[in-house]
Image 1: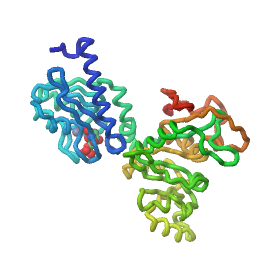
Image 2: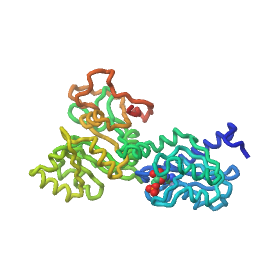
Image 3: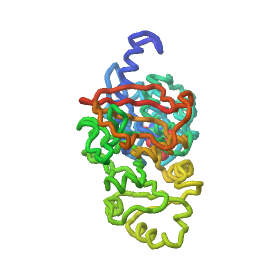
Image 4: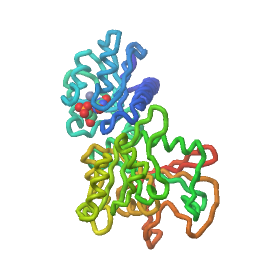
Length: 377
Ligand code: AOF
Ligand code: ZN
C-alpha cells in the first residue's frame, strides 16, 4: 500500500512500530545479560498482529516469540525488530529460519548486530530469500538501548557506570562521615532501579567498613547484582553484611596477588570462601589492578558494572580508563568542611586541559535533585 522507504507518512509509521518494539525490548531489562534486549512487532494490513521480546537469557529471541505466539496468518506481513535478526544456531535456532518459514514479506531492522556470528549475515540471508529488508530505523535509540551489549561484545570487558551523589559544593559526605542522605527519595529509588539493570555492583573496602552496606536491589522484581568489593589486603570483616549474605547473593572480593598468596591471609581466605565468596587476585604495583580485574570479570559473563565507589576507587577507575558512563546526582545542599570527602579523590590531574571530559551530556530533574549523565570520551 505504501511506497517502499518513501513517504513521510510511512516513515512515521515505521518509527512508531519501532518505538513500540523498543518499549517491548525494555521489558527484558536486567534479565537478558550478557545478551541484548530485543523487541519485535509483526504488522499486517496496518495493524499489529503480534508482539514479542527477549524475556530471559538463554530463552527464545524476540522474533521467535512474536512469530510463534501469533494467532493470525503471518504470510505477507511486516516484521519490526530492534536488532538485526540472528542467523546462527545458538541456545535457540536462528531467527532468520522462522522469519522465512512464516513468510514475512518485509523486515525493518533497528540497529545491526555486531556479534561476529551475525554482523550483516542475518540481513543477507533474508534478502537472499527475497525478503525486503530495511535497516537503521531509529538506529541511535536501538544502539543506546543496548549500549552495554555493544561495548561488551566488542571488548569482552564490562561496561562501567560510575555513579555518585554529591552536594552542590561537591561532597559525598560530611566531614564526620555522615551521608544519610545526600539526595532525596526519588533519586535514591532511581539508583536502586539502576542496581537491577547492571550485572555487577562495585565498591571499595572503605565503603564496606564505613557503611556495612548490602548492595542489593531493593525494588520489586529487581535482580540483585553480583557484588564486587575491591579490597587489596583482604580487610573485609567476616561479620559484615556482605559476607553474611554471600551464600544468597553472588559476591566477589578482588585483592592483590600478594594478599592472595600471603601465608597469614590463608585463614581469612578460607573463611571468606566458606561463606560463598569468590576471591580474585590481580597483579599490579599497588592494590587491585582494575584493568586486569575487568578482563577477569568480563570472562565470567559480567557485561556491566555499576561503580558506587568512594573517592579513592573512583579516582583509580578513572585513571585506569575503565569508566564508560557517569551518573552524577546533585543535591541543592551546601555542607562545607575541608575534610569532607568528594566523589573523585586520588592525586588528580595537573592541568585543566587534561580533564576527563564527558560527551553527550544530559540533565534530568528528580524532585529537588538533579542527575547529570554523560559518557567518558
Ligand atoms: C538474544 N535475544 O532477541 C536476539 C538476539 O546466546 P544465544 O544463542 O541466545 O544468542 C545470542 C545472540 O543472538 C546475541 O548475541 C545476538 O547477537 C543475537 N540476537 N539475542 O539474546 C534476541 N535477537
Ligand atoms: Zn535470534
